[in-house]
Image (cartoon, rainbow, N blue to C red; front, side, top):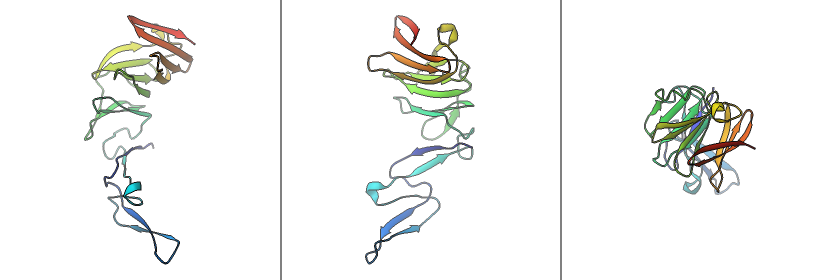
Amino acid sequence: SYLLAVIIPFSAIIGTVNLRADENDDTTEAEEETEDEMTVGDDLYSYVQTVYTSYNGLSCGEANDVASTPDGILWIGTYAGLYRYNGHEFVYRSDLEDIKNVNCLYVDHEGRLWIGTNDNGVVIVINEKVANVINSKSGLPSDSIRSNVQSSSGEYYIGTSGGIVTMEMKIGMSVSAD
C-alpha cells in the first residue's frame, strides 16, 4: 500500500517528539508527548508530516506524482486517475475522460498541467479543463508516458516507453523524435 506525505512547516498533526540534551550528559533524550502531534528538534528544525491514505481523504491510497498549479491546487496522479486537493478535501476528477491512469505530472511555465498517462499519451489541462491530448496519433512513439519537462528555451521533452520526443508549441504543435 502506498502513502502520500505532505510536509507542512510548524503545524502539529501526527505526534510530538521533543529531543533535548541533558545538561550533565552527552546523550539525547526523546520524550513522546501525544500521538496526534509530531515535532522534532527545536523550532529551527521542526517539521510536521501528514500522511494521506484511503483512511483520511485519498481514496485510492497511492500517489505516482504530485504537482501544484499557480492557483494553489495540488494535483495527485495515481493509477486510479487524477485527484484535486484544495487544502481541505480530495476530489477524484472522473469528469476528465481522457485521464484514467496517471504516471507523471508537470506544470509548465505558463501554468498548464501536463498529465502523463499510462495509456492515452499526454493530456494538457488549462483551468481544470482538457485543452489538448497528445498521443501516438499525434506523433508520440508510445501512449505510455514516463516523464515530461520543459527546457529553459521552451521546448518540451516527453519521455515515453518508446523513446524521448521533443515538442514545441507555436502555432499548432510539432512533435519530433530525438
